Length: 357
Image 1 (cartoon, one colour):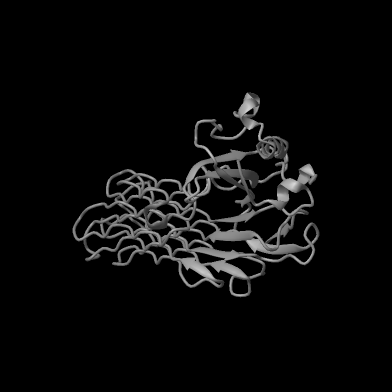
Image 2 (cartoon, rainbow, N blue to C red; image 1 turned 60 degrees about the vertical axis):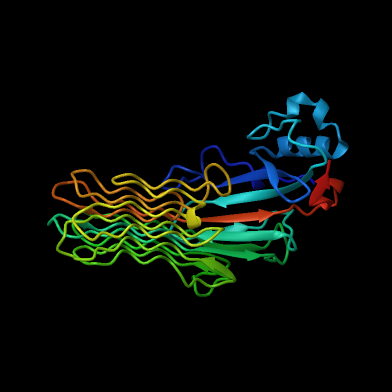
């Protein structure tokens, strides 16, 4: 079905960017599965016209002969992936900016009330800083939340209020800043259809890492990981931040410290997201949705003249920093909102959420 380019094409100049330099983005996904359900290929399109041309060729059974279409998705399609594959397809909207304030999402005209998923990650907490050679603990990772088959009264017209949680700030000599909650369809987290709780900031000259986000409203949630604890606040310790929760499970905790050491951050999404940052290193970015979007790992801590590691995008907690001088602890990373739906249309392609070929 024809869809206005304004509903999927990113404006060239007016689009705000998040703290990572990313813009809000609509992408189009095609997956090829074996009959046992195993995904053998997942291709992404940034252009709706390319997406439609590829699907039309696939439905007509001519794709193997149209070599020019193979390079349109990322990664490219190849004819030797298997025989008798089933294909499914979806539109995926990534909302990443601006953060920390309520925004309005206008439903697309082809939104499908009976086949959609909305997912959230909240912002990660910042690591603590300490310039007195005592404990500085990592920030907690943001919580993940999911709901299915959200209904807009009139697709193409009805709006929903949402907010993307901001990341918690780092510090030279005090507690880390808390991240911000994320939510969809409401003006507050508590009053929304789906919400996710932010990670807490790490404590300075204390024993506790920042709390992992947990307790958001809605149906399905996985908690963020806690920042690493210090067993004795008098030790010079810089513990790692917690990983963000994700599709597959809770974020992992930052590594605890029992002596004067720096420790690594925890991985996101029960190990399926971004890796935990090594000492003084940022947490890895998550890639569960695509190469740029997922549950981030926690940043690594530091007890040298180098800063603590930042969390990974999205929702990773920052690592703690304990030393003198100008460097600081790692910042927590903002959250995101992801909307996935199988387009509703009268066109024959879009009446088939999965097709065989």
